[in-house]
Image (cartoon, rainbow, N blue to C red; front, side):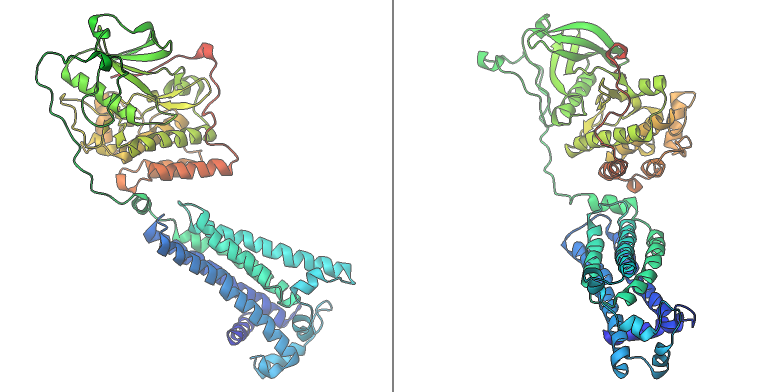
Length: 569
């Protein structure tokens, strides 16, 4: 390796070794340091290219490959070259013939230049090494301060930019693989203590500028496409057994429950199938729930604030208007969806009961305002609040998707901000498990036109990517005060605009989330980042901004100004 180091030094001398102060070989040393700095840059570029094809898949093979590239490019080759250059200078001073340099090159070593340099041979190859310069006493305090600054500050500055190169190579992914770059670099600095101190100073002077410029080629490679990331983060598909779907019960007399069974609290079904409805008192005309006030009213039904007379807690009672089979299916679907999702930012379901005026869903009562009311009343959110909203709701939807439940109607009016400023996802009224049959009602529009994903507006099946699009549209509304495609005169016009995948022209411009919004609102579902990727990206930005991702998404709403809003269809 000493031969390669001397050849590199000769090349550096030919490349840039002017005979001016501080000397041709001093300049060549800085040039050699710049050439050594190219190896960490090359390693970061190679890792960025690997991630172009693998995304965020870090199995044993890929992790080992990144580790080997980082160790070789940042530690092994630079360490061998730095020590080889130092050995070349020592040999040129003591045994010129064994240095690997030509006679013409050795002849210039004896030239004196600036007064503070003196003889180049003595300056570069006859002084103390790094450890001796830093840890042995010096008679000249000014000289000691010079070495202290040059041999500590310059490597520290180079470490910063090597780490930035690694961060650029790991964009749109976890940052832990960057340790394969910065840890070897720290070892490089520690293990290079035997290098001649004066030579090391000029090597680092050449190393630092290339480390700064090296961020550019790594950034030009670019991060992996969102489709690659989504594919790499998707767990391997396992064959799923066909879910059991019991046939609808034939018309017959209601089943008689034994007294012991009637005394038990009924449980909601976690798998597709009929949701048990408690027999007894409510069907007979008496209600367990005392209604306080009406919270919302729509085409589908009415939501009441009520009190559970048995448990003494306040609940939200969602009662359907029409007691037909399609309505019951929808109520059962929402009950099943919420029963299997356990997340602090998803509204909880307690029961499904027969009330005197129809089938009723008993849910957690959330005091607060809808996100649409907050934005309409107080103006758009700032980047911190919007980031918290995005990360929180992405976690809630991801929890639902993990259980196979799609929401399919994420929009500002279906996000409730409680008095503490925390966001909650409500109204799973058109949610269903993936694979469930669709509603039998004709003409049923899935989702709200201004916030519906292009593929579902065009008639394609809903997917987790559709929920991700609707959440991004909701965040865009929170930042800009209007839907990403703008508003249309009629719902049909808005639906047609969605089906044609018209561009999102009303995105907020002055926000740090602009690029992630563009990616998440892509008309092609496979190119969108997953909710997991979005959450990681946003939480990473919040952490760098010194903010907690689980804080309030807006100012705390005082109780006297709160109102429960649950839009219905």
